[in-house]
Image (cartoon, rainbow, N blue to C red; front, top):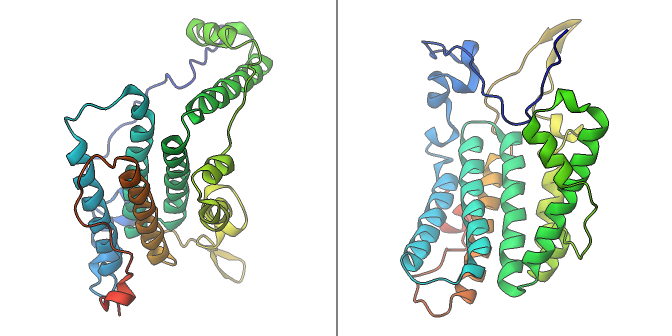
Length: 275
């Protein structure tokens, strides 16, 4: 009997592509119908998404000012993580707008984590070495688990070679998300947002099921799969706050550049644009 090899992350899916993605009942959030069910389609709620869009535009303008300027190689990791923060906030807003709030929560938490490390890197240069040590330590733990669960003939040669290269436990100071937030002076955001999002949607907790509770009629199961917009406005507000905090640190670091007006800290309620 031939052994099955696991290349690990190297398998490409060859699923057939449906020709018609019309109805939500058949194709869910991938359907064309889902586009007409977006939260921002309501004039009463679109102000929250516009808040994020304006912040994104503002951050893009800042990055364009840096574009083409000589930047030291040591700056690249922080700038890369700042762009990841920007992307995650946009992704969270897009998911929330489509009624996929729990998934948006998970992505928004990633955005805040990237924010902590971005700003920590701008404050202390040794953060990068600690991040590398953390990464190497996680690779060591992963290699140890894989070697325990899979015999060599069930892994591709490339993966086995990778496992062997991480056979020695690394040493050196590492860094956690909390420590990065502490360096960035963002412990409040860590305690209130990052930790809260972990329970609400990032992990498989019972609290994360609040949007998936089925309707029970007697002994019959009735699925409630579909767009759900509870707490969607909070996703937009938190995405906006994440970008605003990051921009403040970005501009404090790159003082040699002249930037335009900053992201507003006023909510739709304060602006009088939300009903």
